[in-house]
Image 1: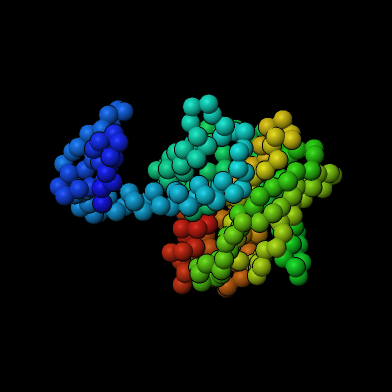
Image 2: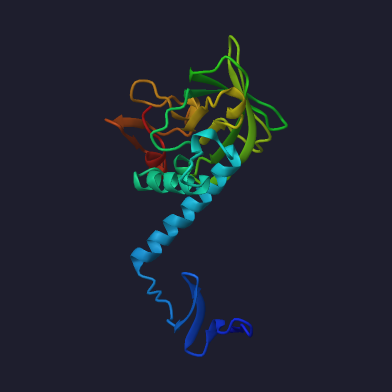
Length: 256
């Protein structure tokens, strides 16, 4: 429906087969064109990827909003996050690996190489032991945790507050994680949310499983890591298993 401008003349909006609008500070009238939306397979695939990357970027903004590594004089933070997520997706990354908490090619000052499960409490506090390049100070973290059961069904995922505790035996504590089972597959993505207080020094833990979830002895998983009575071996970097959930497991686990 068009809106008449009685003082300046003309109108705005659709009127019949025409549309009134402002273009380059001038009032113009153009023909109304029905937008084309063929819904091709490629178009639908692109929309699906865009929707996923939008969700990933929303999660990332909650994890380390206004992170110094995403500040630019020319591009808004949201645009950089989306660009990063889309690039990660294009490069073959999946799920938590696509959450853009740091830019592509950014090298954080501190990073975690492996995680080992230590303990859990009834109130949902998980304690992990990180290894890697670690800071000397305690740090505030945001943690994204995703969990699956032995059948490959997702048990839950969500954002949690966490902290890195420095010292002779450095630890990471993640809070309020319900129904966590250390014997099943879990993936952790963590990033510091206090960079401005530490000279923009980012603490980063890319999407990782704990050692209990992913390590193997030689080329065979130990029974304590996948306690289902099946055989797990590696053909190069490819996991082979006799499990009835072979497709899910072979796609999920990898050599580290």
